Amino acid sequence: MSKISSYNVEMFVASVRNEFESKLQEWVEIPTVSSDPEHRNDIERGADAAVSYLRALGAQAEKVPTPGNPVVVGKFVTGAGRPTVTIYNHLDVQPANEPQWTRPPFVFHKDGDTYIGRGTTDDKGPALAALFGARFAVEQGIPVNIQFIWEFEEEIGSPHFEHFMKGNYKRLGTKSVAVSDTIWISRGRPAVAYGLRGLAPMRLILETGTKDVHSGLTGGAARNPLGELCQLIAECYDARTGKVHIPGFYDDVAKPGKAEIASFLASGFNVKRFKDAHELLKLRSSDAEEIVRRIWAQPTFEVHGIVGGYTGPGVKTAIAPKAEAKISMRLVPNQKPEKVFRLVRNFIRKHNPDVQVEPESFLSPFLGPNKGPYADAARDAMRTAFGKDPAFVREGGSIGAVVTMQHYLKAPIVFLGLSLPEHGYHAPNENFDWEQASGGMRMFARYFENISKMG
Ligand SMILES: [Zn+2]
Image 1 (cartoon, helix red, strand yellow):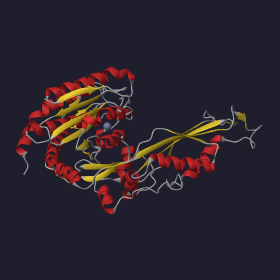
Image 2 (cartoon, helix red, strand yellow):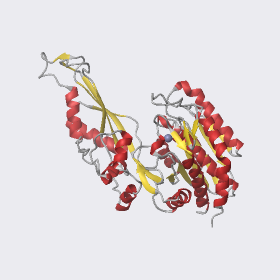
Image 3 (cartoon, protein in one colour):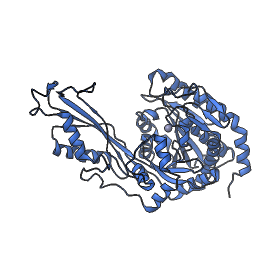
């Protein structure tokens, strides 16, 4: 039996709509852009606003400093000995300098049920929906303690989150974590992500001289670093199919099962919408199943840039002394970035020993539960709130904070995202809407109740 009656939930949701909107307005209008040092003071203001709101709602709250931006930690304590569930969101935002914004990005605008402004969907709206859901669960006497971790550096790759976790994990003990920062595949079809890809970026550098030389005077004898890097890259992978030729690269890949693929496809994934959303003219495959495998469950090898040589108009017949290729691999469970790096480095040593391989910072892939009690709790909560079972999907990107929380908190992590593709993540005219916000409050309230029954 549910302690939360649907009548009570509806009363609550209707009664807090104004408060939700004015709080979202207040938060959106603090431009917490983490990538721009000019906004450092706004970050502090954003964190202070979050702390004072948590306190006003009766939660414990503090702003925890790091060598970078602070992290806000809050907690509704309902009773010692009760299980704690932790909600992770981030309250920093992307910059908003795209010319396509039709109104000032940091002035909140309400258009019917739609809320427009930078940060509405990523991730201030979902953070508030989770907070309101928590508040309702506490009011209803659900026997669970609810803790919040609100980061202010997510959009710049969480450079100090590990520092924060290392210094605080002992007092942040939790039975489970819910992250609300992911996107459904289509409206009306809830999606629960349970996997993320990792990342192994690196630079390949080849230096064969100290200055540009004349291809008439030296060509034929001089080595060409640009050409050699192109050749090396072509040896590493087939750029047409994406297949990686480095021995051992695929050894640790956990292949998704039939049921997982069926669930990916049940998310409402659609090839045309995918192409349109990303303005892709041509793909490596036009088959939906093949595409979802490729973006969610297979590793990649990419070339992001090749630097060196002449790039002005026409042709200048010089041979450059140095070239650099910027490459990365997206990794899937159970690949390890350090192992992949060793494989790549050994392969490159064998094929072109003069090329230096410089690693950048690595992120491990992540796989959470897609069955068992936490997946069941999420499924039931999504169904109760949105009227439909969620599809269990994965995300092709990486969220560094998730892997860090897994490492330090050693608790299951579930993704309960509320954003939609049309909300414009990281895009101009970012928006969120009341349907997802109110559904999110219902969903979180139910999720907390489900968690409380797990004992
Ligand atoms: Zn986000």
